[in-house]
Image (cartoon, rainbow, N blue to C red; front, side):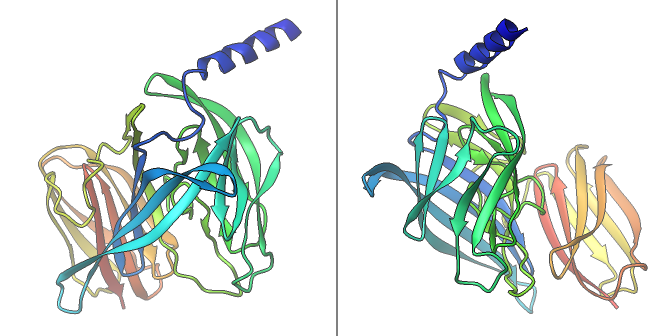
Length: 315
C-alpha cells in the first residue's frame, strides 16, 4: 500500500512537470463584475518582469471598465487604472506584494488544514488586521490537457481582506459566484461589521498566456466588454417597474441555450435565483416577489453569451 501511494504521488508530480505553477508572459485574466448601480469588466494583464526586494517579479496591470445608467437612462462608461500588482513564484508557492511586504498567496503543495497570512491591513476598523486563510480541500483538474493542482481556501479571520474559493495552479482563484469577493487572483474585501465598503463582485471569464491556451469556461469572448450589446440576446424587458412585487419578464434570444437569473438587494445579497432557464426563441414569465421587502433590487441575467443587469423597485 505504501508503494502504491508513493507511485501515485510520483505520477501526479510528473504530470505537472510540463506546466508552470504560475503565470507566463502574455498572461491576461478577464472578469465580469457587478456592484450597486454599476457593472462592467476587470482585466489583469502581464506587462513585464521587474525586481522588487531582490525578487524576480511579474508586473500585472489592473484595469476596470465601469458602466452605469444615469437618471435619464443613458449608458455611461469610464476606464479606471487600478495600478499594478506584483507576484513571484518559488517552488509550489506563489507570493504577492502588498503594502511593502511579500505575502504567501497560494501554496499548491499544501495539505488540508494548512493556513497562512495572505495580507495585513490596518487601514480599516475591523476585528483583525491580519487576513488568514486555511486550506479546506485539495485536488486536481485537467485544463488544456494539463493536470493542474487545486486548493480550496477559506478566510478564517474577521479581517477586511479575504480570499475564498477554489484556486488553480497556473492562474489562481476562479471566482464563480457573488459570494467570492476576491479581487481576481488577489485578496479582496469581505464584510466587516464596523466598516461599510462597497466592493465589486467579480465573476471569472477567462485566462490565457503565451504558453497556455485560452481557458474560457463561460464561452464569452475574452475581449468582450460587458456593457456592449450581445449578439444572442436580442431583447429583454421587465415590467411594471416599480411594482408591488409582481413582475412580467420578456426575453428573446437567437438560440436556445440555458440562462440563469439571479436577484440581489441593494447590499449585494442574493434573494432569488432561477437556474438553467431554457429560452427557445422567446420567453415570457411572471415573477412573484411579493414576499421580498420593499426596496431597490438588481436582476442579473447570465448565459447565452449575456451578462445583463436590470435595476427595479418593489414598493
